[in-house]
Image: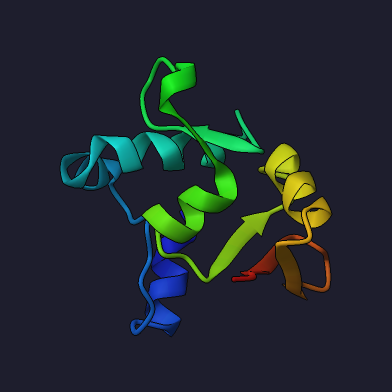
Length: 112
């Protein structure tokens, strides 16, 4: 639900999520599920490329973000995703670059 605001202010960036996840699923079911597990705060150190989250379908979160999504930053709301937020804050491969005054939104740089 933050996509509209982010896109309005910066249309030059590449966003992995948008208004309707059905388009993300249509593009790639595997990427959809990887994003789903992280955005729903179900997993942190790994994400899954299928609904069953089988061991064969698991992928380390850092690798999914860098290799599969080609992400440079992670925009996160701490209250919405406390498990994933804690993981990002503790993993040295992610650097906190911005936190809003009320600590509602945070942006992490993904180190390469």
